[in-house]
Image (cartoon, helix red, strand yellow):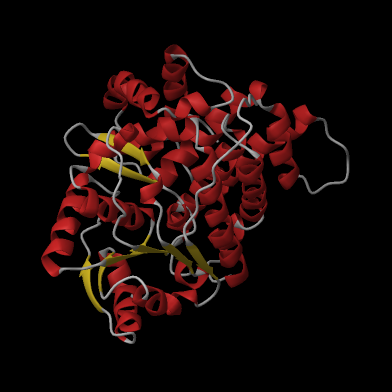
Length: 394
């Protein structure tokens, strides 16, 4: 890993509340931040009763709440516009997101645009800086995956250009993160797999990133350990509360890690696939993770060997080369056990996919993430990686 910086700045939510039943504390924290809440959620969370429960917990502290349930896909600029309009119309002064990364990312965008103005895309690559304090935001994840509750980044799709805009500024960091593993128990196996691999991707990429540093490394190592040893447990036995708790902690730690060290090639390649073919973010990361690790291996054998140790339960001594290969083969086996298919098996039409590769390559490079990878790909190598991923066999 190439490292030239000697000092680093660390960003995290002002308050993190973690543990079983911590959701019940939302009213206590909301009361300190505002008087009327906009709840950003989705129809599934509403049907599970989480939105009603949130409103009840807020009402106990005298806080009125208005729900916005329009987040029905991965976040795009129309959701930001609709949610912002409702916030202004209702005079809400605090935002609470209840759901997966899509709900949290939408809430982040609304919180910033509400006080700083403009279009959410204006903030991409810091073209416009959020200089005004955003609306206070309490983020409550219901999946163990994105880690968005602990990051200063949001990913919003531009519906006109079909580009996933990765926007990162300190103002997008939630004011409070409430991480209650009990809320993740309702997550079905397919979602558990997708979000779990997403969290593992965050931990691995932040550890391999050229921008990694001692603080991010500690979080990434802990996250990898927790996720590797619990992801199959929660996939195969969703009501295992201990494993759910470990995954929630690992996901949050991975979020804190990549927020401070950045992600790399997997995410750079994943976002265009999601924008153009509507593959859920966690699934596209899972499809790409072993492909990218095989490409990157020669530039980060020592760090992949550390990851391999988490999978190595035997007593015999293995070389760094063997441990690095064990890490990759173990991730492939993990994806296979959780029924992660390749892009062709997902149902993406071959002609449309190959036609889109040049745009995906340009969009991936433009995101900046590939330049954080231990081995930085050329355009030609990126094209080849996209070709490989289409029919990749786990």
